Structure formats: structure tokens, C-alpha cells
Image 1 (cartoon, rainbow, N blue to C red):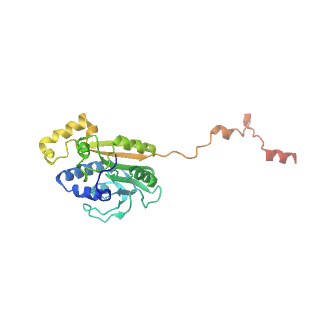
Image 2: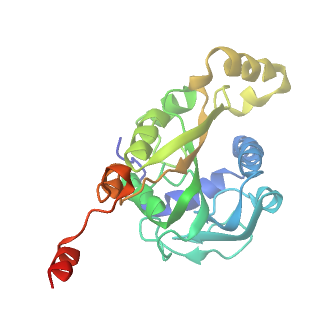
Image 3: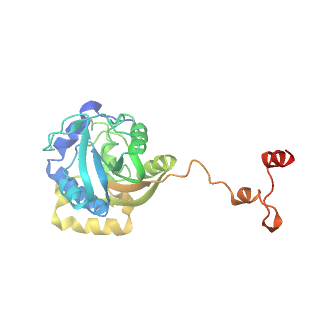
Amino acid sequence: MRSRCEDDSAAIEGLAEWLNTAVGREVARVEREVVDRMIENSFGHFLVQIGCLGDFHDAFEHSRIRSHVVLSERSCVSWGGSPLRAKPAELPLAPASIDALLLPHTLDFALQPQRVLREAERVLIPEGRILIIGFNPLSTWGLMRRAPHHRQPPWCGNQLTSSRLIDWLDLLGFQLEVREWLLFRPPLRSAFSSRLDWIEETGARWWPIFGGIYVMRAVKRVTLSTPLRPRWRQRSAFLPGGAVKPTARQGNHARQ
């Protein structure tokens, strides 16, 4: 579904401000915990975050990836550093140069989410990982995003289900490794009372696909572009008994 934000260019910045609200802080907390767990065993040279939503610094420090970079089209009020300016669909990165990519709600507000994924596939190395965080349309959070009067982040933006993203990733040669759903209670401040913690436990057990947020990790699979030569072709130059079949050049030399 097409984004319904009043100003798509400023949607990410608006979402960054929302993450400082009571509900937004809870969203940021659970997302950090999951990202920390998903990249804990990752290794390599470069991890790039596309968009500066959320503070994943601690998660990056726990990973075994050496360098961490944040690329963003706009500055973000909730992020303490100064990100490098770049468009998500036009990354200033060499092909097959990045070990891991993190897209925190990047596709939720991208004008061309499929193009962003194609760009991610271009810059990732073979067996590189991509982590995607998104709002789940199939949840109470998604229902609020469908309300016609909600024109501000996080209630506007694209309505991308995790299944659709998995289909897009599959077409690009990615394979899903893990997917988790978070926050089963409605996105209301009153719903985050400790008295309603049972909703999280019940939702995770009985209706996991209805969590308000999904986090998925996929790996870039590649196949050999040049198939290996079959062995029977290699043996065709030999005659029974191990004698070597003469070539045309050998035959001409013998007659000389």
C-alpha cells in the first residue's frame, strides 16, 4: 500500500521524534533487544545501518563486526551521532562490500521499498545478512495505521506484510533465517501497564503473526554463474585401456 504520510521526506524524522514518547520508547527497547540477539554471532568488517532510527550502539558493540556506519538521507533528532548522508535507494557503496545491513523501519517509509532492497542486495557480500524491522499491518498497530485521519508517523507509511517482504527477498536471492513478532498489546499508553504483560506471553504463544512489529534476518545466497565442466567431457579424450586418443595436430605431426 502506498504511503499516506503528509510529507514522505520528513516521515523518518517524525518517527524519530515519536520514539521519544512513552509508547515509542517501549518500541525502541524491544527492538534493541532483538537486534542485539540477532547480530550477536555475526562477524565481518562492515555493518551499515540505513536510517538512524533507534539506538543500536550497544548491539553493534556486542557483535564481532569491526566497523559500524550509519547512512541517512536526513538528520535524526533521536540519534546522537552525525550520519553520513545517502539515499536508501542510492547507496554510495561498492558492490559486494558490506557484511551486514540493518533497515530499522526504512522500508515502512521508503518511496520505493523494492528498489531499496535491490540496492541492499547489490552492496551485500555473498552470505551477507540483512535485518529488517517493520510495522505489521496484520495487527492492532496496523489497524490504527489504516485510520484515514492518521497522517503522521508512525501511523502513516507503507503497509508491508512480512510475507510480501519475504517474497521480494526470495526473488533477489535471499533466504529467510529467522523472523520474530513483537508487541501484541495495542499501541496505547495505558496498554503498557505491567498488569497487561500477560498479553505479550499469550500473543507470542497463540497468535504470533499478529504482533505489532516484525524483525527478520535473511542471508544473501548466490549460485555459481559458470557451471563446472562435467567429468565425462574430461574423460572423453581417453580411449579404453588408458591410451590417449591422438588429436588432429598430433596426427598431422606423425604423418610428417
